[in-house]
Image (cartoon, rainbow, N blue to C red; front, top):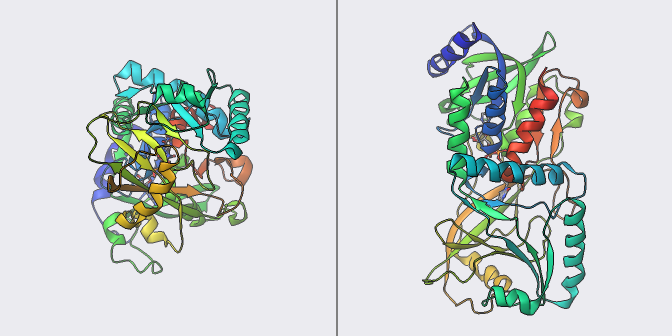
Length: 414
Ligand SMILES: Cc1cc2nc3c(=O)[nH]c(=O)nc-3n(C[C@H](O)[C@H](O)[C@H](O)COP(=O)(O)OP(=O)(O)OC[C@H]3O[C@@H](n4cnc5c(N)ncnc54)[C@H](O)[C@@H]3O)c2cc1C
């Protein structure tokens, strides 16, 4: 019965408008087909559950999951015992195994976090201690000359070597996870926006609208609902939209929904260089809101620098649901990048930085506020059965994706 229902949903979602909105009972709904939503859908499907994934975009992975550094983080930066620390360390191990077993392009490049002034050296030791507390193996403090021998273009006083950091092709990863989810019965429905929800008979009812109806929407007037989904389990994995969407769930205590903050990060690529100057990922000491303008390698050997931090304000729900953020990278921003990069790469030539792409971090703390953990809210937080909200899934969300999925299945499947 449920199998039939889920199969028929795709058809229904593409057929518009009805005065009496149809209602469908579903087992599990995942909102958002980014790397985290897809990983969750796969895990639930592998556990034998019926899964429907709805995404407002026309295909999977168009949000933050395709606008990041593609770095597999080791787990150094995060507060011990935080979800970020636990998921990053566990997720990294799961991710390397998954990539090896499924032929996903990836590389364990290793990473150097560098101190370029003596005032930064204590921070480097703090990071090493924190990494050790988080269970990150293999961390080693290098003298500047040792690091510069490994990377002749590098300039630094000391460096923390993290041998288990690496890079992954996120698109291939998402494709593979989706394939597995689908072969275990999961259905993906695109151009389908969850616009709001309401509580009825102690279950969350999701209001689904064709994304094309949002284009001309003023953001306030009621939209023609296509379908009301009544799932046993809902995982709100809408990335940048997870918070504004949760606010539109009528009946959910808004007092427990954290504030939303967006921090844009731009990348520049290195041009005019035949041989990549670095073999390792090179990171400075972290800054407020991000990990600092670092060197990331693509699997094809291209070098990019970024992301910086620029706080974005005044995003409305419609822009958020339709991913209409400003992702443009102005060439003039390069002027801020050159001095930052030259602290550790003094040979960077004038005119060699070309605008790349931008991504936006879904944050729940604003400028100058201390870092906060991932927030995963289940019934024990909001007393609404069957709803799991994923808030603030910024970096290391990609690295953590398989561990988050594992955790959700273990904690919330009944
Ligand atoms: C600049 C930057 C660099 C990063 N670098 C790294 C890194 O190197 N390593 C790492 O581990 N992590 C990194 N991250 C973090 C990582 O990219 C994210 O944690 C991860 O991609 C989040 O995936 P997601 O599935 O939660 O969200 P998303 O990929 O944003 O997916 C959310 C999906 O929800 C859909 N959606 C939105 N609203 C609705 C709605 N109302 N109804 C239906 N669907 C909806 C969207 O269309 C989208 O497809 C970085 C992040 C940024 C911004």
